[in-house]
Every structure is written in C-alpha cells, then in structure tokens.
Length: 301
Image (tube, rainbow, N blue to C red; front, side, top):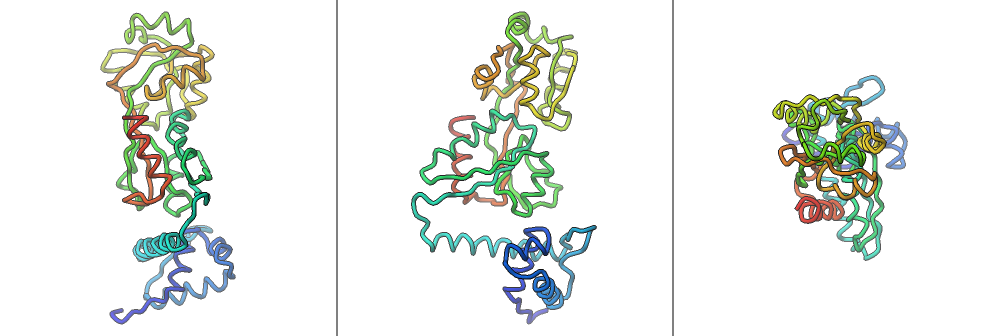
C-alpha cells in the first residue's frame, strides 16, 4: 500500500460511475463500453485492495472506502474541469448552464426572484430547473446532477452528503386573504385568526412548524382546512376565498399583483430563511455567485 501508484484512467472511470450512478450511464458519457469500465474498476479495486461499490438492487452504492476515494477524485477532476475552462479562455457570449433544484416547499414567486438575476448576466445562461422534495434534490446534488439546490432549511449535518449551506437571507411572514375576507380580518389581526379557516404549508416544512409555535404563543386556534406541498396551489385556493394563507413578506407585492388578494397582517416573529446548497464550500460558479450576491443585497437586504 505504501508504494501504491494509482492509474488516473482507472480513477476517472471510477469517478464517472460514482457520478452517473451506473456503469451503463458512465460508459455512455465516456463513449466506451460498459465491459471496459467494469474491467478497469476491478483492476482499481485490486490495486487498492478493497471494494469501492456494493450492489443494492440494480444500483451501485459506494462503500466506505469508495466514499473516501470519491471525495478526493471528485475534487481532483472538478479542479481539472475548472483549469480546462480557464485555459480555453471562455469568450464573451458563451452559454453557461445552471442546473437548479428547487425544494417543493419554496414559494414559486420567491424562487423566481432568487433565480431571475442570472438571466440578466452579461454571459447568456441556460437555466434548467427541477422541483422535487428536498431529500431527492440532495441525492441528485450528491452525484452532480444539479449545480445547486434552493431550500428553506440548511442541509442536515447527519446526512452523508458533501455539500455546503450558503444563507441567502430571511423574511418575515405576511398573511393574505381574498379582498372582502382580508378587510374583515385586518382590524383585529392577529386575534381575528382564531377560529378562521387557514391554508397551511405541508407538515414537513420549517414554516409549518414556526406557524404552529406562533399560534400557540398567541393562543389562537385557526381551522386548518387544507395543507399543501405546492405553495403556488395554496395561493390559488386562497385567491378563491378558501382561507387565509401566508407568504414571505419579501415577495408581498408580487403575491398581491399575481393573485389579486389583500394583506391581513404581518409578523416579524415568524421568519423563513432560504439557502443555496452547493457542492462547493467557496462558490466558483458565476451564476450561483450572482444569485447569492443579489439575494443578499436586494431581495433580503
């Protein structure tokens, strides 16, 4: 083991399999046969003296040694790609691709406001957005199918994923309702919410927990008539007069303009925080840099 000399070609094949998730997909990306990759992986495992993958159903999952090797290989080959980009002298007008995962609990209007600045960059950006539960997005981030995830909570430290939280900022909460209902409830807010029909985000969201704590503190018992993972759908129900709903104060005017609703009241005691989660401790992707800087200075500043 002391005189171990790793074959970089073997290591690159291993990195491709770990990144793409299967030997077949890695072979397609590298334009070689799956048999070639399988043979090279066996040679690498023999050289290291330990298995790098184990099978779980049809999937290949990294072993403990595999995760260790991948952490080094990933950094090495990512740096190689960055070096290649720099040496190629990317010219003005070259399209940058940004693959973004948006957690389902993040309000759509806020997601738009966060991502919008990349479309104004001097270099054109191709934005690819994918919406899913946070846990699914983090799995995709871990194998580099995504460049970043937009979430309402930081990554759980207990998850075995090499990723980093970048706080964008936080916002208070505004309560909205259809026009007549909002006018009726506004004068006595927040007491007027007691016994009032309310639409809530799903129980898995941080906002749901914060709202429930706030209602208990205010000794209020609103009637939860529906709950939603998709908060755009929640706003559509609210627009139709089904109940009071909430959204970050940072996009209050956007909500009023789009859904033709009115403000019932606001609370700075309830806050929502938003994060970019990326594989990089220090963000290098120019589009993600733009997102974080503009969000901090303009949207949440």
